[in-house]
Length: 152
Image 1 (cartoon, helix red, strand yellow):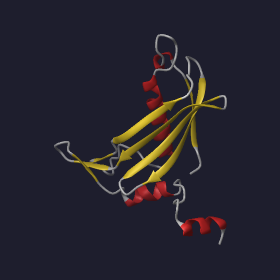
Image 2 (image 1 turned 120 degrees about the horizontal axis):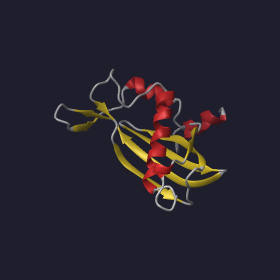
Image 3 (image 1 turned 30 degrees about the horizontal axis):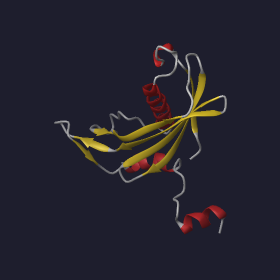
């Protein structure tokens, strides 16, 4: 997938008492880029056409390399790493002036939520999968995929 990017400005509410971005804000930055990417594909996480379909996070994390500070302008570059049977995996890089400050990842499960609130993993709907597939990198380790990329 090509990298999808959004630009942001560090707000005062994103920082701690020292004016350094609080570690939890990076998750909001990644999520904002993720939602913008999905909207660009015509996908929304709250879909009136598919009631009961939800996308809870099942795994996420960040590696912090250097701090962002109040009033810094930065970019969030998001890549769709994988589309599984019932999950999406994304990677986000937080970049200021060409320097990667943090690298994060998130795995979201496609689930059906019952009226009682219980979640059950379900396959990603075909229409949603098609909207995502053009943004997914070729399969790794598949000889045929390699040959197709080389034009063989």
